[in-house]
Length: 153
Image 1 (cartoon, rainbow, N blue to C red):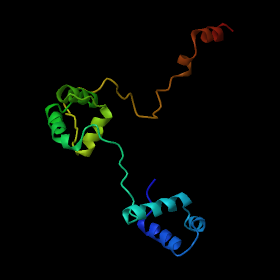
Image 2: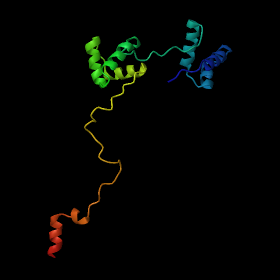
Image 3: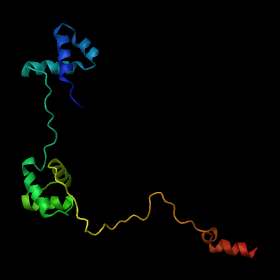
Image 4: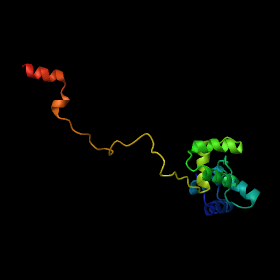
């Protein structure tokens, strides 16, 4: 969820400072009373109402290690993410998950294009999706038992 704008925070606090009860200000601005209390505390401690930074996940491969990752991808351009993670563990000494390698590649804007001369994968398309299969004649569909039965009558 995104933080409320600084403009809204200032209007809420201006209304409370003007003497409006916190419960009424919460109802009018559609925020909770606890939110107003947090705004009061933030203004008291920091002097402003600017929202704090959401830290998020700490990357397993730090941005400072992007050159090492770029060198690894340049040395092994056709490796999969799992192979890059194994190479990273062997060269850097830290185990990383393959999703961490993928996020680091995206963050560093490193393209991981495979060469076209590689052998195609084992799974192939058999035909167009949704295309009908070849129709069979009713004679072929009928089993030998039904043909015998039909001819014996």
